[in-house]
Amino acid sequence: MRHLGEALDQARKSEYGDLRLKAGASSGAEVHVAVAPGELETKSRQALKALLRANKRLNSSYLLKESFGQLWSYEREDWARRFFENWKAALKWQRLRPYEKSAKMIERRWDGVAAYSRPQNKVSLGFVEGLN
Image (tube, rainbow, N blue to C red; front, side):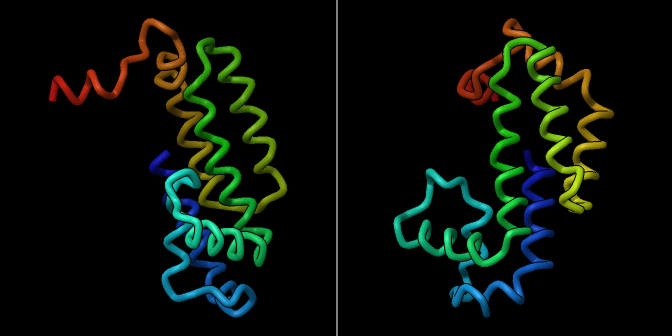
């Protein structure tokens, strides 16, 4: 998810100069793209919507990042793999190089993702933090 956050940030930076003019966004509005939608205040959520409406490419980047989080909810490797293949297919015509790089990196490390999808390997973050 960190890599996809960085990919979204790169897309935002490449598109942002034009966005502020189109959306009438404030100078700090680009930060809202990096925050999960459920964590935004009403005013921030409105700024995010204006940014995403103003630029289809940034909107696609944002949706790709947010939808990828679903991968971690699968409890069977074949379901996780099917989701990932569909997610990669959505990238095909987007021409978003940072996302393509992230997809290749995930592909190379698929064994770890597959291991996480097994129910016996899911560990709550609270437990991990307690160990730390």
